[in-house]
Image 1 (tube, helix red, strand yellow):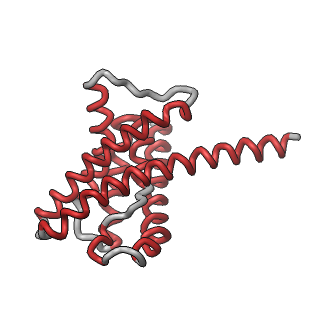
Image 2 (image 1 turned 180 degrees about the vertical axis):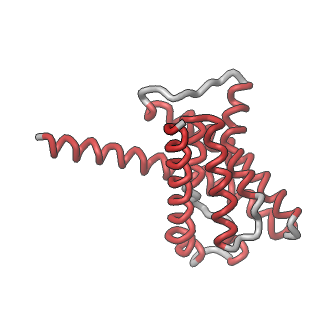
Length: 186
């Protein structure tokens, strides 16, 4: 029980940190170059990598912390689509289930790095699920079709690139840790 609570806390913290990095570091730079109407979508949405990795590692147990952070953070930041947190929390899980139904099982093994292609494919499918769900939610919340249509592609690109950058940062962090550990133990 204690291990699961720690697991949930780690997922929530990672999801929160990547949200903050995306919205407070990346989005201001992105918004210098994009139209203001596209400010709801990030071209590099790091939290998508957390979604995919957490579902990969712990399955459905990742949904509650993803759901809590995915609803609370947009609310605190003043974004109007709170139901988008539900879509975000479920999209990676649904993508893994789609692959499982197709007979393609991706499970944690000792060599996580060897599975990056599979995880990126699942991240893309999850991005498509999320990219279709969020605009539907926005349409229901009185956004116009003209406002929502460009966001579909932005969400798919942003989630996919975000997962790629997140995995690349994890790999770089792991290599840096190994290098430092080797240097310090000499």
